[in-house]
Length: 290
Image 1: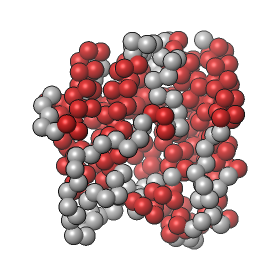
Image 2: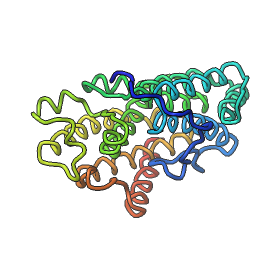
Image 3: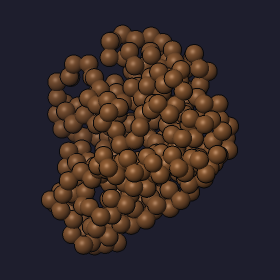
Image 4: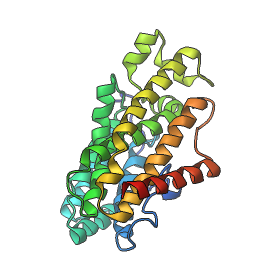
C-alpha cells in the first residue's frame, strides 16, 4: 500500500451516494435464476457494498474522509443507529441479515478491503493480490452460499471464482485505477521482472512487455477459473447452481476477450452476442453438474 496522501485537505463533500447500480456490473446481480424471496436480500447486500466501493473510489475525497465514511457504514451496520441519510443501505442490510440469519462478517470483511483502497492499494506480488481478493471478493460468494443454506463444501471453489472475477475487473480498469486513483492491483514485481515501470499503464496502448504482464495475469486467473470449475457441482440449491454456472462461463469468456484486446485502448467488455453465448454455455454446464 502507499502512504496516506499528504496534500492539503479538501472541503468535506456532502454525504456520499452510490454512483453505479447493478445494471453496470460485469456479472449478474440478483438475477431471476435466484429465488424471488431472496433477491431483495441480495440487493441489500449489493447496495451496501456498492456505496462503500464508490466511497473508496471517489477521487475527490481525501483518504481520511473516505475512512471516516467507511467507519460510519460499519458502525451503523453493527449498531443499527444512523445519523445521516446516506447510511440507509447499512440499516437495510442490517435488517436483511437479521431476517435471514446470515452473519455480518461478509460485509465487514469487504469493508476491510475498501479501507485499503481508500489509502491507495498496490499489490506487490500475486499472493498479495490474492490476499486482497480474500477480503474484497471472496466474502461475496461466501455470503451467497450462506444465504442459500449451503455448507462449507463449495467454499474454496467459490473463493476461486470470486477472486478471478476481481482480477478480471482489475485488468479492465488497470489504466483508470492508476491514472485516477494511483492504484495498481497487477503485481508490481512483474513490472520489475519485465524491466518496465508501472507508469506504462498511462500509455494509450500496451507495448509487448506490458502485454506479457497482462497475459501473465490472465494465466493466473485462468488457473483460478480451473479451480472454480467444480463450483456448480458442489452447490445443492438449483437456482444458485445455475447462477454460478453462468457467472463462471461469463468470466471465462471475458478472460478470452482480454487476451484478444488491449485494455489500455478501451474498456474490454463482452458484447451482447458474446454474453448470450456465455450464458447459454453456463446453463448447459449447470445441467451436467446437477
